[in-house]
Amino acid sequence: MKSKKIIYFLTWLLLSCGYLMLSYWLQQRGYYNLESYFIDYKKLITLMDEDSLLRTVYFTEPFLLFLGSSLFGFPKFIGSTYIFNAFIIGWLSNHLIHKSISNQKIPSYLIVYIIFSPVIVYAGISGGSLALYLLFHYLFFTLVLKYTETYSVFHLTLLSILIGVFILLNLEVLKLILLLIPIFFFSSFHKAKGISGSFYNRASLILSNDSQRRKFFSSFFSSIFVVAFIPLMGLTTFLILNKVFAGSTFYFMESYGNNWNSYSTIFPFIAEVEKYSPFIASNTPYYLFSFLSVSLLTVFQIFNYGGVKAKSILMLLAILFLLSEIQEFKIEKLNIQYLSLLSGAGIASAFFFRKDFQKPSKLNYLLISIIATLGIYLQWQYFNISIQENENLFAKSIVDPQEGIRVKSIDSFEKTFKKLPSGRILIDDAIFYPELTTLPKGFVWEGHFSSSYQQALQIPELYADYVVMTKSTHPLYLDDIVATAFKRLDLLQVRTSLALLFEDDFMEIYKIQKK
Image (cartoon, rainbow, N blue to C red):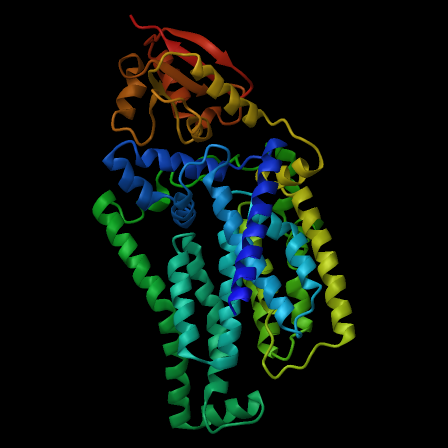
C-alpha cells in the first residue's frame, strides 16, 4: 500500500514537472498569458495599502486562481499561476492514468488521450484559469454520474460543496444547477422503493398514486434544494460582504480592473477584425468546427453509454446546455474555458462504468482509440483557428518562435525604467498591468486602486514623475484613461510639459518636466 502511494506521488510530481518545463519552454518561444500577469499584478496590489487588500480579495475574478497561485509566492523565473496549473493538471492526469491502469473496464488507450490532448496540455501550461475549469467540470460530471448510480445524499452534498467553492471561479457556474434539474427529475422515478419495471411503468404507477406522487415531488425538490443550498448561501454571503465594503451589491461584477479581460472589447482577441466574422453566425463551418473539435469524446459517449443510459442523457444535455450558452454571446463564450465543459464531461464519462458492467469488447476498444486519436487532432485544429489570442498563440509558439508586440513592449518597459531614477508613474493599470509586474523597486504608480488617481489625472505634475500611455495608433488608445485625460487637458489648454523617453507600436513613456 505504501509503495503504491509513493509511486502515485512520484508520477504526480513527474507529470507536474513535465508541464512546468513545457510551460517554461513555450514562454521562451514567445508565449504569454495576460491572465497570469493579471493575477501576479493583483498580488502586488495587496501589498500597497490596506484598502487595496479588500478590493483585491473581494473584486478579483477568478478568485480561486488568485488564491491558489498565492501559495507559490512570487517566483522570478516563471509566474506562480503556471506552477499552480502544473500541479492541478499533473494531479488530474496522474489520477486518470492510475485509474485507467487499475480498472480493466477502462480502455488503456485513453492514457494516450490524457497525455497528448491539446486541451489538457494547454490547461497544464497556459497559466490561466482553464486548469480549474477542467478540474471542476471533470469532478462535476463524475459526481452527477455517481449520483445516477447511488441516488445518495452524500453525492448531492459533494455537488453542493463543489459548486459553492467554484462560484469563486465564475458566478455562471450556478447555471449548471439548471442542467441538474432534468437529471434529478428522471432519477426521482428510479429512487421510488417497491416499484420496478421500465421507466414508463414506474412513471405511470408513481403519478397515479397520491402517496407515491407526494414522495416523488418531495424527493425531486429536496435534491435541488440540497445541491443549491451551499452555492446560494455562499453567493448571498459574498453579496453582503460586497454591500458592506463597496456600498454596491454588484460592484464586484462591474468595477474596472476586476477581471483580466473585462476592460477592453478588443483584447484578448486577435486584433484582425476580419477574423471575427466567421464566428458571429452560428451556422458557419468555423463555429460548428470549434464546437465539435473539443466535444468528440462527449459525442461518442452518447452512443457508448457503458452500461449507464444516464451517461448518454447527461452528455446530450451538456451539449445542448453549452450550445444555448454560446448562442447568446458567440464570440465571448466561444473559448476553451467554456468549451472545457465538453472535455470535462467526455473524460468523466469515458472513465465511469457501473460495477456490474462487463469488460468492453475489442470493437469498443478500437472505436475509442479511433475517436480519441481523431479528438486529439481536432483539438489541435481548434487552437489553430481560435480567435482568442492566448489560444492561437499557444499553437503558433509550438510550431515556430513568436515575437509579439506585447512581449517586446513588456521587456522594453522594464529596461527603460531600470535606467531611470525612482519616482511615481501615472498609468492606466487596467491596460498596463503586465508591465507593472516587471517594475523595478523604488517606483510606485498612480492607478485605479490609488486614492489620488482622479487628482493625478487632472494635475499630473503634482502627483507623478513619469507618464505611460497607449500609442495613439493602437486599438486600445481610446480605452486608456490616462491618454484620454491628457487629451482633455489639451482641449482645455492646460499644458503639461512632457519629454518623450521611449515609444514603440504599443506605448509611449514620458518624463514630466517640473515647472
